[in-house]
Structures are given as structure tokens and as C-alpha cells.
Image 1 (tube, rainbow, N blue to C red):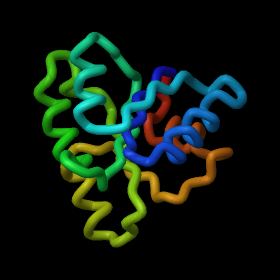
Image 2 (image 1 turned 30 degrees about the vertical axis):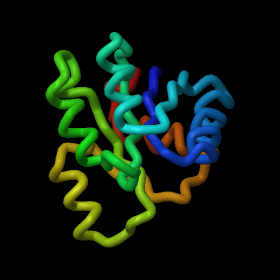
Image 3 (image 1 turned 120 degrees about the vertical axis):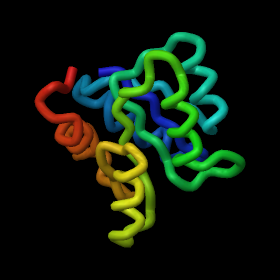
Image 4 (image 1 turned 90 degrees about the vertical axis):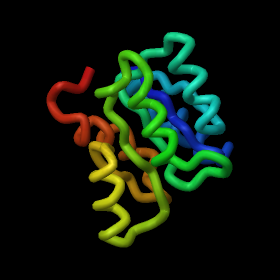
Length: 125
């Protein structure tokens, strides 16, 4: 599984990469900003799923998702939001924006790959 993980926190990016590399669950390409993620996608990177932080400077997660959906070939790329916000109305808003689910931070790195696979469903690569 190819994962694009977008988060402005270096520690969270490192933890996510570790979570997927342990046990060979997937390959993570990290982006420190929405602009970096868009650039990776525009250059031809085709992830199976995008893990997208909600609160980032300059361009937040929902704004990044809007731009991703405008890119050719990414109108249906699964996006899972990652956030520390736990209010039901916020979680529902993120799904309504087009996320297939939300993972609450802090997350357990040992269960993160299984949670992502669960949100992707049986069609997971």
C-alpha cells in the first residue's frame, strides 16, 4: 500500500512512517505541508490513500482536499483526515467534505495500519 501522509509535525510524520514500515504494512511518503502534497501528486505520485492532517498553517486539510479533488486522477483517491479535534460535529463535517473517515490524534502507532485498512474496506491493496 502506498500512503501519502500530510502533516506539519515532523514527529507525527516519523511515527506514521514507523507504524507502516513495521511489519511491512505499506510505504509512506511524507509531506510537511499541503503545497508539498499537491506538488507530489502533480509530479505523478499515485498513493492508495492520503492521510491528511486537518490543522496546518497556510493551507488546512480541508483546503488541501479541495485542491486534490481538482487534480486529474485524484478525484476519488481515498482521504482519511487526522485530527486532535473530537467533537462529533467536526468529525461529521470532515466526512461530509469527502473524507472516508477520521483518525483521532494521538493515535496508537501499533494499530494505525489496521485502522487505515479498516477504513479502506476490503478493497485495500
